[in-house]
Amino acid sequence: MQPFIATHIEALQQTLLGIVQKGQRVALVPTMGALHQGHLALIDHAKTLADIVVVSIFVNPTQFGPNEDFNKYPRNLEQDAKLAQSSGATLIYAPAVEDLYPDDFSTNVSAGPITQILCGQFRPGHFDGVATIVSKLLLRVLPHVAVFGEKDYQQLCVIRRVTDDLDIPVDIVGFPTVREADGLALSSRNRYLNDEQRNIAPKLHETLQFVKNDILSGKHSVQDSINAAVSTLSNYGYRLDYLALCDGQTLAPLNRAQEDARLLVAAWLGDTRLIDNIPLE
Ligand code: AMP
Image (cartoon, rainbow, N blue to C red; front, side):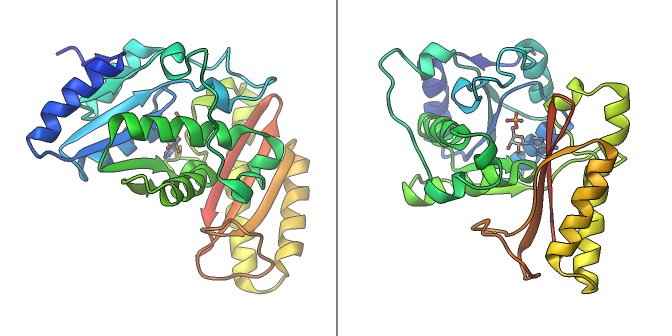
C-alpha cells in the first residue's frame, strides 16, 4: 500500500476530522525527514499512545542559521514515507515551505531564557524557529499527544515550556535516545562524518558516561570532572561548544549532583556538530 502523504492543510485536516469524529486518539511525531531508527522508535512508541500516528516531515528553514546546513540537509520524501509507514505511521504530513511560511508571515514564538543557553548560545534564533514551527504543527494537527526524542534534550524542554505557557492542549512525551551499538546517538547528520570522524564519534557518549561516573563517585568536583572531559575530547579532535551539568527541566547550570540532573554536550568534528546528553542517575 502507498503511504498516504498530505501536502496541503485541507487534505490533512479532512483526514483528521474523520479520525477524530470516530473518537480516535491522534499522535504527532514531528521530524525533518532523513528518517533513521531513532525516528522510527518514536513512531513505534507513538503507536502505543494513540490510535493513529501522524508523522510530519518538514525541513524547517527558520531553525537553521545563515551558515548552517539547510541546503545540504538530506531530503528523500518517498523513502521516508515508506519507512514511516512500515513503522506504523497512518499519515505523513509534508507541507511546502510557502504553505507554512507565506510571504506575509511575521510571528515568532520565543520561549525566553531557556532558549539562550547551551545550544541557544551557539545557534542564535534556532529555538525560536523550533518553537514557532512546532506550535504551528501542533495547531494544524491538534494531536492528543506528541512524541519527541531526548536526543534533542533542550528542544524537548523548550517545547514543554511553549505548550505549557501557551496552553496548547497536548501531552508532550519524551523518548530515550536511540544509539548505534558503539554508543553514538543516531542522527540524520551522522552521514556527514568521514570514516575517521565516525571512529571518533562514539567518544562523545563514552566521555559523558565517564563524567557521570566520576561525578557520582564524589571524588572530584563537577567542574573538575567537566574540565578533564573537555580536555579528553579536545585531544580526540573535538571542538567543544559546551559540556555542562544542568537541571533536567529548567536546564539551569549545576555545580553539584542532584536528582533529575542531566549532562549535555555539543561538539564539532570537522564541519559536523554533534550533540548528546545523558541523565546523571
Ligand atoms: P529531526 O528529524 O532530527 O528534527 O528529529 C525529529 C525527532 O526525532 C526529534 O524529536 C528528535 O529528538 C528525534 N530523534 C532524532 N534522533 C533521535 C535518536 N537517536 N533517538 C531518539 N530520538 C531521536
